[in-house]
Amino acid sequence: MNRCPITIPMCQGLSYSQTTSLNLLGLTSQREAMTKMSIFNSMVQTVCSVDIRLFLCRVYTPQCVAGEVQRPCRAFCKRAKQGCEGLMAHFGVSWPDELQCNSFPEEMCISITCWSIPFGKTR
Image 1 (spheres, rainbow, N blue to C red):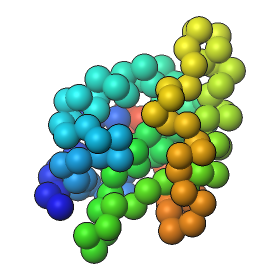
Image 2 (cartoon, rainbow, N blue to C red; image 1 turned 90 degrees about the vertical axis):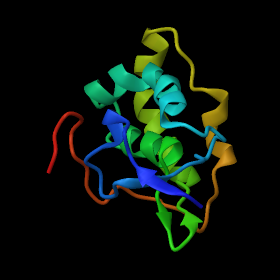
Image 3 (cartoon, helix red, strand yellow; image 1 turned 135 degrees about the vertical axis):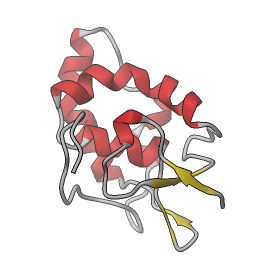
């Protein structure tokens, strides 16, 4: 699996800086992923959920450890979605079908945010 530096601004400054060339949704370029992620920009900036930024990045720019893609857990998805549903409804936007939480595993996955850096900040 090819590894490459993360170039999506929203996903820079996390606990990992390399991603795979193929993300969890089958997108093969970070440019394409960034376009798909753009609907979430205001949600990440308003921090409607402390989990939203890291969850999105774990989907669109997944970390690869020892040749295995680290998938976010279903509970992680639900926390990210729950915190932002009200804001999304306000803007008339629904949670994307490709991010339905039931499609994420319950085991052998990333389940919690150990720490977070506000969007636009670096270490």
